Length: 109
Image 1: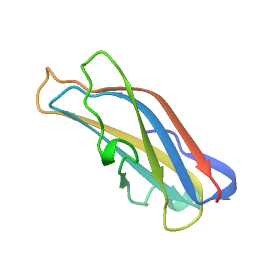
Image 2: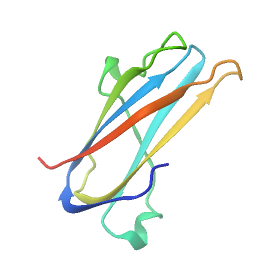
Image 3: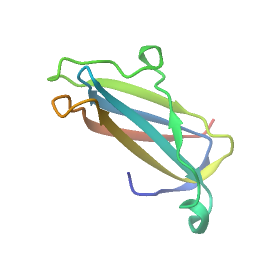
């Protein structure tokens, strides 16, 4: 989970880029949370994000390379606070996904 990011201006979208190494038999899920009040932010629910690249799935890799996956997030309301959570799952201990190069950009349309 990232730290809570506080923006100076309101935003209405987030673009997230994440370099993922996902061997067959493993999964990487990205969740986000947005809000406007620090006091109630922790009570907000995490929302699953779908990749906007590769037909909405995280691409498999050979176990040695990282492929960039982009997520375009458009919450229902404007926000000044956000956080990102990455969940890595596997069907066995031999298939371990890894991530690097997380970049999250708040947008104002």
